[in-house]
Image (tube, rainbow, N blue to C red; front, side, top):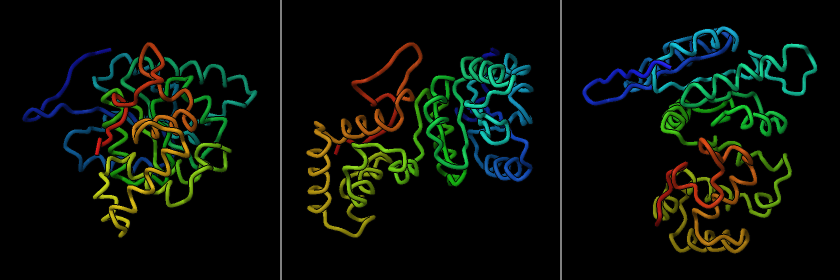
Length: 248
């Protein structure tokens, strides 16, 4: 793949390709990224097959956003093109910095198969603009990005560790995941610092986790399964290279 970067006053631009046949999504993402200095939407195509023909000439670092519905990533489909589609997605994921899948809802089948194809992120289409930008930057940096909304609705997928936590505990752990300190969590939720510490202590006991980072690691291992991957191997002990968490 062509290895060139456009640098603006020391800023390395992240190039993005969008795969969707939905005009509204094209407009929304184009408008969003047009306002971001370090991200450039360089290619928009209707299908994975179109992008596959272009991928070897894409600039680096490159992130691909794939609209799951538009390209019919139905991995349980028995149609003849399903295997070909999966093969093309895998090749794209291997040749760029990473792929982000946008889905309408949490689909366990897609959730389990996507990391095998090489996706580094799955996000609901309800994701905010700020979150999508954060996902693009994380994937471009070689990290995995987990849309926080999955934490709120993942109980439908029967996750025992997650389901052992109360709504408030999930809310606090979600903020921990986003990098908030204990003081910031207290301010955001309008509760005392002592209450935050008590909840986190309770979370650690329930999950049998050593610390906050370990708690996040355990939950992501349960919820994301194969997504906790780096190129070349599984990283079961630490997520420090994948997510940014405060130590306080």
